[in-house]
Image 1 (cartoon, helix red, strand yellow):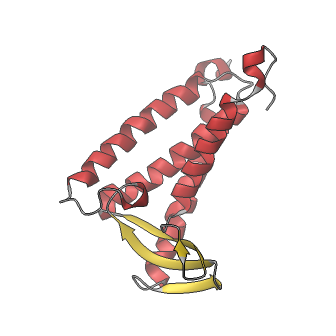
Image 2 (cartoon, helix red, strand yellow):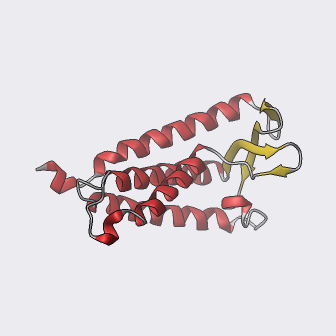
Length: 168
């Protein structure tokens, strides 16, 4: 039975899709939007931009001397390996968890590729309120990681604790 041998590894196709959408969107940004330019999509709320992040989330350690590139790449590799093993060990009824892990994995690999090949992560989504509050620029990989992490957190609150079967 293939399911028993490979667990939920079929969900790696979702990881590949996330990776391809992330890299495709970044390729368009690199090709179309000049660096540091801002294109208004929804005035006062949403712009597209073209910026680089050499650090982690929220540009953490971006001003460091360059060691952070390889440090964050190593973390992404280790986390990706853990996610693949976790995905493989999931049971057939753990679809929600499989989707969450696959999304986090696809996003992690998208940003890992940027770090290793480009030396920085390409960010282009800029959400803001008027010109008063700005959320740091991010990309589709970051969105997939965030959504997957939210799904993982929600999975912890499923009815498993009460002894009821979880429903996907």
